[in-house]
Each structure stands twice: as structure tokens, then as C-alpha cells.
Length: 190
Image 1 (cartoon, rainbow, N blue to C red):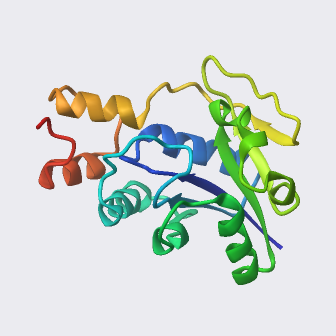
Image 2 (cartoon, helix red, strand yellow; image 1 turned 180 degrees about the vertical axis):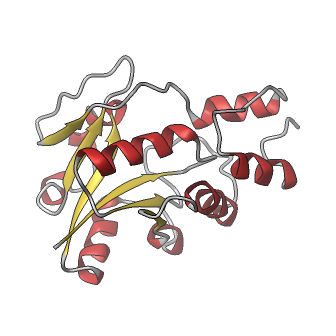
Image 3 (cartoon, helix red, strand yellow; image 1 turned 135 degrees about the horizontal axis):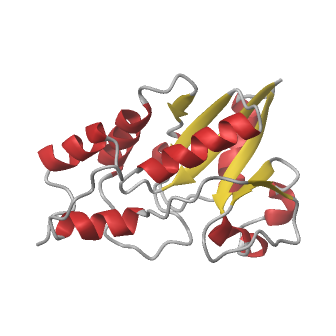
């Protein structure tokens, strides 16, 4: 049986905080792999100016290419419309039947689990992993495996703001991702 962690998100852009979380969960739970799963349209997001899906997937590939246990899972990008985790996991379970999935979420998302689409069915298909974030506690009516990670308070929205103001993002993003952003003129102020 294979044990795979999944970290989903818009990754707009992917940053070193995502990589830190993935690496900490990989080792803490002794998983075989971590799949980075960029989503097409996350149901809970209101951010409407998402960068093109192909560009976000390219940035994720660049961010993880040096880690042997990390890969990109593009199943949600291939499916159009909102990305419901329940539907994604059903597809993954059919395709990878000898795999246990661990779905990694930030502490800020744990409290919203009761509102997730088909959560009662979903908790029977996967294990949730909650990573602590400043200002949030891991408190849920559902079982959540808690993983302590070093705090690195960075977000994609903060990076987009810095890029728009032409401020430094060094040590916040992998260099290859920053080069891709510069070459493609992403997140520049209009």
C-alpha cells in the first residue's frame, strides 16, 4: 500500500511555504510521495484574477523539480468548473486503488471542514492532515492528523502584492519560480 499526501491549492504563485509544509508532512507521516494538485476553480475562493492554469502548473513543476518525492497531479486542472475534493478523490481512488491518501490543509481551513461538499463521505475516503498556522487552532468534529511545522508566515497574496509593488520576494519563492514570473510578466501592477 502506497501512502501519498496531497496538497491542493491555486498555487498563484507557489512559494517556499508550500514546499516547507509538503516536506514536513512527508517526513512526519513517513509518506511515500507528496502530490501538488493545482485546482481550476476552488469553491471557497473569491479571488477572481487567477493566473492561467497552465502557467500555475508550470510554476509548480519548477518549484518541485529538485525534490524526488514531489510531483504534480493535474486531475483538477483537466476537469473544468469548480474543484470539489470529494469528486477528485473518487477519481483518484479509482485510478490508484492501492493508495492511501492524506489531504493536507492549513489550520485556517480546518474549521471549515463541516462546510465541505460531501464531507461525511469524504472523511471515509481520506485522512485529513492539518498544519498549524498563526492565529488558527486545529479544532474539528472530524479526525484531523495534526502536524507541527516551523512557522513561515508567507502567502501567495502577500507575494502578489510585493511583486505588484516591485518589492523583494527573495527567500519567499524558489528562484526558478521567480524567474518564470519575471519572464512572463506575471503579477505586475496594471
